[in-house]
Image (cartoon, rainbow, N blue to C red; front, side, top):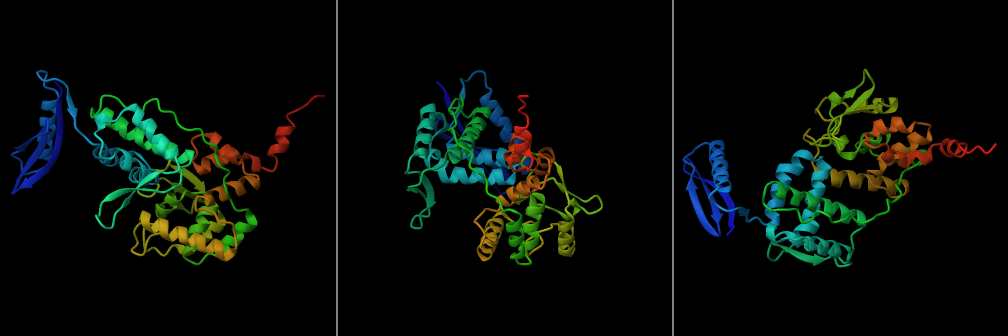
Length: 371
């Protein structure tokens, strides 16, 4: 008979740390005889090893719910290895789509068919999402009446697959039920950007606070989180470069440091912005790095306000990156140089801008020679 095992919590009474855990639903409480937390954690790890590696016992199955495993994965894996934007995206996909469906389920009870049914639910017009009930202060399932796109479904499947892979690697489950589930085919949408005239109009209508931020985006192609995490020490006036080594509080998307040429117009703007009050180029009102909530609210609203005032097409902040890349290519910049500036790991990603090069189609058509 397999033993069902689950660690509960560590807690302290007086100066001594205790641990709760369960075997086959029966609760056990033990004193670690330790007053130092890290020593108590060592005791806990030792007991866990003893219980899970006892040759006299049969295989032990961890009795974890999906939500418990997801919370552990976010803290121990996603927050450590993913960029800030990727990490926050995982949180959003879990809370909005995955936990309402799998949250209370025991990990060992989730099978391959459950994953397929979940994909079917996401494709339907009645997507179930989790929102907080004002009456009970609990999360409840409600219908949005709006189907997810193929891209959203695939990103959600990636998050689900990673949580289950983490559970498998930690022996919470015997195998990952999401293995073999194929992603949906999706057509990459056309990107949006502003042309040279529109970009000039955009900058002319920015207020003095948003102007340096917007200018940095259109003169460098840096991502929003990279702009938020930019420090003055990485603005190298002497060598006319900006060192991009972080994305918010995490690594860059490619996990590589890159060097972006410092445009002379942007240099002048940044010199006028630098008052030496903070280590960050665009800090919050306290001189600290802007938090994700301030980023979403102030940056989004600032851009929307400027676009409306300037009577320009609606775009997102990330489209300013496309604006830089598109205008760079249209001015004759090379695709290889653009790849390095944007930090793409695959040249095929950069090739999305190739058709904008003034000589691109002419060079391609001249490859034909029937003489």
